[in-house]
Image (cartoon, rainbow, N blue to C red; front, side):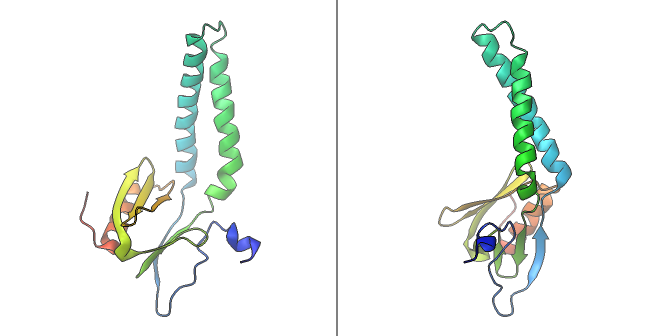
Length: 150
């Protein structure tokens, strides 16, 4: 397999004969940055709390550190995370690189923040991240897999 296919953030699995892509799930840029703003707020609070708990008189530096850590992470991985794509076909859910799940194998679909987790009968877990309409993504996947709501 070529190096480009190994690191691709889009599906590289070939469609079967007659298989059609019904919908593609793309990450939402605004949702990505909103989620990271919440992570930064949590990291800032945690950093300050830890420094306060250990008696550091400069607990405010925990906020600076928490913000910097999440900002660097967000900027570093944005180029990859915002390219990720999942394709729903009439037979499978195809994810980045060679991830492929037959619809009949999907046992659970649930929301986790702005992401949708897909769990197979074998216990494999896949995360479709930064969805602007998480409930819509869940509903579309449940309907395709023949799962009941909830």
